Length: 384
Image 1 (cartoon, rainbow, N blue to C red):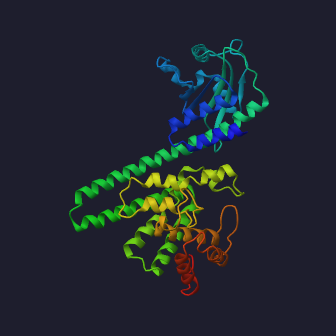
Image 2: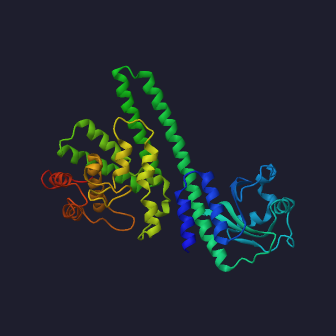
Image 3: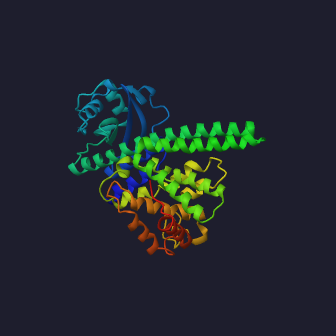
């Protein structure tokens, strides 16, 4: 179980689909203590060999890297049945020509075909195998392989979604740079640039809403509350604008987290919470290369830092945390506690305010807490 957890953590740390596929086959080989493994993806009626352990030699036949599904009946059986298929001994089994060629090329003897299933659809196959010698797959091995295959299917699907979103954001960034270059010497250029940035933020919010309606609504409410707290604190209008934009996308890093974790109605496991804790860094990676006139990426990265150093991801303290991030942190906590969450009903604004007041000076900036209390208690502000 400890080894399975280690492999799962390695998979969660990968962002690209190619490196993730290699991590998965290395992990299944490590778990089963077998000498070889492979992972195929499915595109229509074709199989694509994504990665192997050990890596294939350069002269491995191209027609075996991309092959019609019908030429591999044992893989097809696992895909159609959505259940593991065991091939005890390739030398005694009835194999297709393509299957026999693969077995001869790689010396495969005993094979376990594990379907990769995501949201009821088989997206690939994870295949550990023995080389030359017969290996009897135990029930525990099959169960472990199924568990890893389930996590692998989630990770691969989310990685592909993340790559597509990164490509989309890169396109937006490139268009934005072209706009800035074309009009940078005029006053209208600055206005157009800011409109483009607002468009990027809006597009990111749209991406979040299509994947997770709760997070999108949460971000909008946190943005409004952050702006009002900043107003009470007499921040300059320009800094308030930057803060509100950062708040609108402060959870953008959750795009890389499986929706099953984000919307889980029960308490998260330690592993799942560790995965959740990666989102500030992921958000920073998404935003860092976009040239905002405000420290948006840093604000997003620091919004879970606490003034006593108990926050994450970097354990920053006091003044080392951007003031905007300290405001965002308080607004985020108040909105989250006052609103419904997937795993609990709303606790209410009074409970939320009691929480930040009790931990004023330890977890939360005292000035920010005072401003938030004034906003609700004296000005009658209400979360929409």
